[in-house]
Image 1 (cartoon, rainbow, N blue to C red):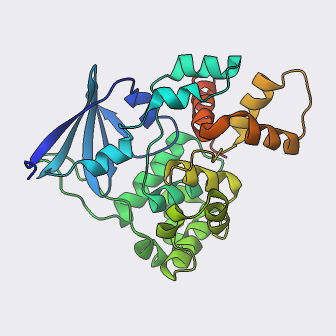
Image 2: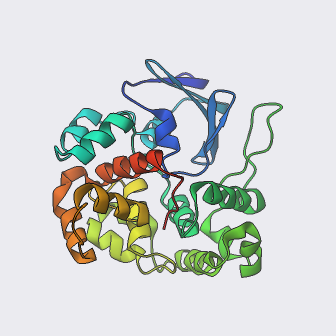
Length: 291
């Protein structure tokens, strides 16, 4: 039987924890005194990057750390993924600048709701909305003694019981009715997020597109960051700009042709390639809007 412990060490090489947690995948991580603090599976978590891996701490002793290993994706073969990328200058530049960046495997509901918030918002603004939603409607989590209160992400049932005005008070604006209607549809079972793991990527995308406020870009974000579909390729204005500038700098290319290019050029881990392009573009310029 595994020993109960509040701390655990994940031996892993080639993991850029800061890039992974700040690359627009998840919105609950904050750097405090050299540690990354966030919430995973309704648990407060503190992480620190070390030369030989990642140290983790939780508030209450536990025996099973698989949930966090899965979230962080510490066991994937990153070398194989990077080798699958096309051997062209944009990807070489992106990998050189962002090597160690990994995709997280997040809770589908939290990921879905967070990306509904994301439309036309900068990452810091999305973080603020998520924090307000959790503080007002989430469950207070168990914390180490003396730590400020931290709240989990509210379940669909909790948000479905809110009024639109209550959600608007969390600074989500026109996104409030989308989130409210989505939460109610999930509570009624009109879309079942837990069933999408077993669907094809196209089937899962079509289910997500039934939800208010969810277009192709948001659906692909959820497919990639929550379900791990490796070919899901979210395209926002920044990725579109990067594709045009880096791959078609002297040509006016139509949207349809660009989508065809994305579908064939980036290989079996196209979603991973997208995240490297997105983060590289973000590092070069100002903080992007996700939409």
